[in-house]
Length: 447
Image 1 (cartoon, rainbow, N blue to C red):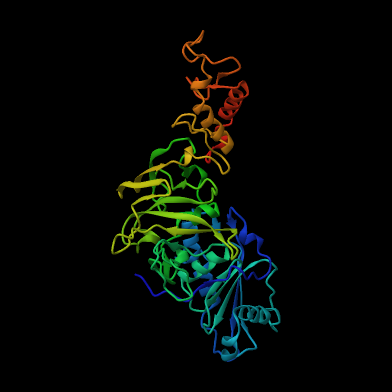
Image 2 (cartoon, one colour):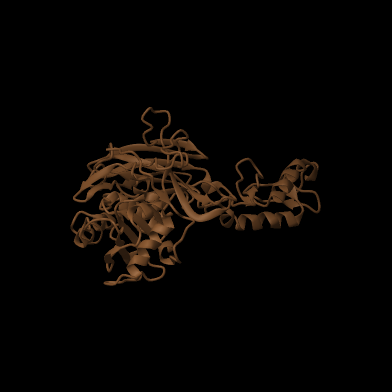
């Protein structure tokens, strides 16, 4: 079921301390989190027990967040060793606390924990922390932590906890989608992903709703997908190929869990991803089994410079009234077509075509000694090659010679840029053509 989107904000530019561990990639193993429970001075008795949060967030086998992270990460991520501290009474009453800025709210709780007369605790520098308050006054996340109301569900802590380990919101390519005046166009419009909460499709748990999953671009970035299950289209030089995809939520099925399709020679972190999702388990709330295609772009700062963050944009079929995920794509020199979905086998089949394996890295162009000559050379080399072709007739020996009608005049030799290339050039240009051929693979966008 779809729900109205909550006012949730990632504070990527505000970092509380140095949280290098939350930025590390790959992000695997046990990550210790400190849950700090705080109440305003005029609030009543603690509204939840520590055991409630232990079962909701930390314990396995309860149907809570720990089980969600385990399944979504393929067992690569957990919060073993985490601690819960509180409840602590803050000096502010509810009115005063609500009026504070976001970082003031965080620090007021941390100060209450640090200075408590009983059970005082100081969160270690650089550690990931979840601040939980009663009453509920806000909900947000940043790289290194989350701020949560006391009555949060699995979806809220999965989303804000996703920010805590460095994930950004997901978007769609719908130019008309905007769920709040403070949100960017397309932001939160990927309901197959926890990072579009609370616009996500949902599963029911003993602790409220949970999101369908994390989409494959996040799983790939965090290092949770086995490298053997990630295919980079064109890495073997093939322009067109057909792939079997295993459902992301059925890794026991054979096939790729992700196909990555780069298409931008100037930025190999700019690509499409293809994944398949079955309608079951955490994804039981999605409308149907479906293939998802995302465009992954590097985020940019106010000056237009790329940052280390990557944003995933769900590709919707904007010609449909329901704007369902696109099952075909033809853009940026890439064609993607979903051929079949086999629910019984937990597999889908897709065909991909891309000219990227034949494209040159930035600063090089095709030589074009003939129309299909795609050897990558500096631009000046292509200019020289075109000039050589134009002068070909004038450099041949009139009437032919010992090497037939293509015999060159004295001082010229065959260029031999390709088999049968009898364009006559100075000897140094034949050497240059051979050198270019030898460096061909190193100059391709996908070497």
